[in-house]
Image (cartoon, rainbow, N blue to C red):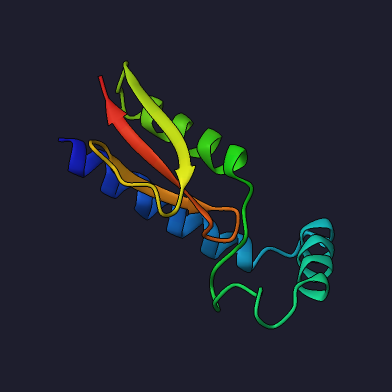
Length: 105
């Protein structure tokens, strides 16, 4: 059941990222242009990857999990190199420098 919920959340995130990439909203385009101009080639995210603040992504994942009917869970933002004793990585943020870990219960 957890795998299904996580898979659905990841699928929804991928769809949202794809839709965001094709959005014609000028403020979104301006933000993307500004960010890409400030980043150097070594800092630029891989094609198709969007640098998203951790709290924004955490809030999106939180809402999706709640919409799937999971009443008790935690989402923790940890450094990318942190070792996990339990939980499942459900997202990465801040230019893949951090990860979001889901724990049910």
